[in-house]
Image (cartoon, rainbow, N blue to C red):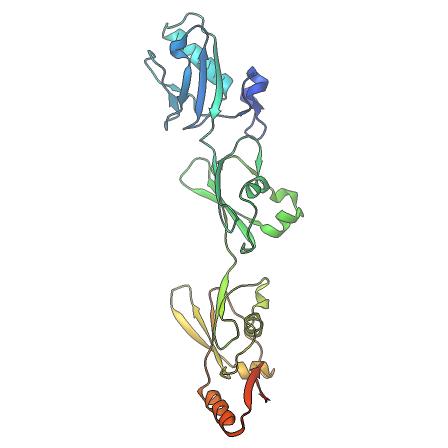
Length: 304
């Protein structure tokens, strides 16, 4: 019964037990495909898919045989006893191998290069799973979220793993072992929208730490203010109750260091409105003198 004492993390292999294939001998679960050979009894020699209830059925046998949670050598014993009990074969010689595993799926999605679902065959670590998905993408947030069944109950256990120390190998304990049933999600980094009178309006990633996400940093990311930018701006923010708020930003005072910079959050929109007065002023100057204007960091510059 040595195989019965093996854990899912340290399986033995079919080849070690019977000279068969290369799949590791793990505990059998629903939807797994097992290969059964009964010497000199071709009617019982076949591949059988384990049912959702964890049992298999063989021809001429009255009762199904429950094999969920057993190792292949334990299934051999169970089939031998069932054939003898039902007086189908006096002294059967049974061998069982695993053909396919389907009961230990691991899914990996989110900010990875190739979302994937695969079976936890043998020893599988978190870094192994990430490698199967081609690695994390540039949009990955700071943490990986792992959801797994909690003792077979309806409830689930959720674990967060920080990406940076995991990938850099700073803490080996973060590279946890996976046994199947885990759903791994790599959330994308938070984003904010910068729109209006900046050089490159668009969607930009929220930086870590959060204190780096200031109004002036956001404007710099967007290439600076355009020539028609107003001296004030707005942050559009939705709270946890779904209510949208518009927050005044004293842009000119922040630029001139008369007021402290303001912190932006994920999902914020920084809106830089247009200044009609500045447009009129530029048009007037161009008409009267042939001189154009431009704005750099909120300061009006004249140029010929």
